[in-house]
Amino acid sequence: MEKKITAPFDQNTIQDLHSGDMVYITGTIYTARDAAHKRMKEALDNKQALPIGIKGNVIYYMGPSPAREGRTIGSAGPTTASRMDKYAPQLLDMGLCGMIGKGKRSKEVIEAIVRNKAVYLAAIGGAGALLSKAIKKSEVVAYDDLGTEAIRRLEVEDFPAIVVIDCEGKNLYETAISQFCTIN
Amino acid sequence: MREIDVSEISKAVKNLCIDANYRLSSDMENAIQDACDKEKSVLGKQIFKQLQKNLQIAREEDIPICQDTGMAVFFINIGQDVHFTGGNLTEAVNEGVRQGYTDGYLRKSVVRDPIIRENTGDNTPAVIHYNIVSGEQVEITIAPKGFGSENMSRVFMLKPADGEEGVKNAIVQAVKDAGPNACPPMVVGVGIGGTFEKCAIMAKEALTRKVGEHSEIPYVKMMEEEVLDRINSTGIGPGGLGGTVTALAVNIITYPTHIAGLPVAVNICCHVNRHRSTVI
Image 1 (cartoon, helix red, strand yellow):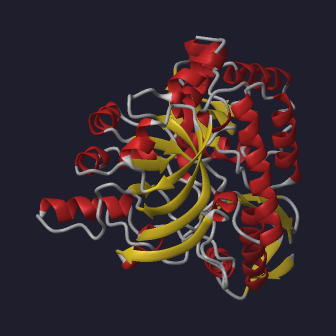
Image 2 (cartoon, chains in turn purple, brown; image 1 turned 180 degrees about the vertical axis):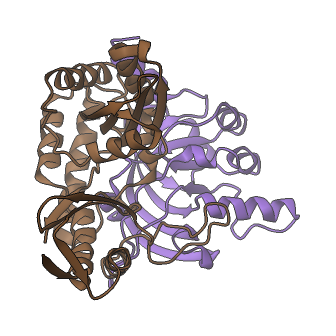
């Protein structure tokens, strides 16, 4: 099913998202990838505040290519989500409500998604030029020194993604692949 | 003896970096079109259409096809009758990478040390494979490699008794393990034989062969076709979201090996399989 949704996601939106839905997201999301997650973890370990509010927000695992003059952002497709698996359960327990990336998630992340009624969406890997068109505003809000890995606040409009793991733990990677698999 | 000033190498490398990242080669574009026609999953077909739209935007607006513009990998064939002047060849290649990645607005993804991880800021150093050939020309091939798929690549040190079936199983297993992480539809580069490091380099070089072209060795060509069929029967599909096209091609290169071993490397590449060559 195709749905237009607003970010950050509220609980009604999340509960209405089902594994396999195609969504178009409008609103505010944040980027963070490997190095930013590592720093956030260090901040939490040292009992320091995080540079962005996690509760109710959506993180897009993405590090863009540099923006040409006059452009909002460069190419901006998703990176492999499993590299953030080590950090995601803690952030989900703190109220993170959505993640956008690509690829499989660990059992621990899926359990944390269900426990906290969150959602994992996939954007199309490698389609960075196309996805950049849905990003209307981009601003570095933390860890500027990390360059492409800095945390950015993005304003997106009709950003296309697919619900992979919904708040009940249904996983499209498993169900869709088994539907087309004809060998062991 | 022919003299070539290394500044010519830098200039060529700069252009290759930019061109490869903005525009896929026609063999790849054609393979994606054919695969879109063949794909049976409705969602898979939609994903192929998005990939085609992505390629069109990148080409028309001079924006990288993928934000991961890769670590710059080169295969450079140097005619033995060439003499380079004006500086060091490797430094000239890296200077070309520096200029290409900066002027082309390409992402700088290289860190100076694998543990300390400080970004070098200009995507250098490149990974360069030099090969000495006959003649007085220099052929430079670039294959910028993103790490979504690079991370899912594998080396298997099989036993001679594992034979052809063992090799085929290893390739399919590597693709299954990669699943959605490697941005399918993939191109699968395979090196069979040589040594531990030789098979890995061959697997990477196999990715630079045009999609649709096969090995000239009859049994290897048959393996390429059979393994591709098996990969496309896994159901992984475009984006890993289910479908009948998981890979666009399996390209295999073989080399003599030792009586005691059967090394196999599988270098997986996403659908953004970039490669460009030029001859100086």
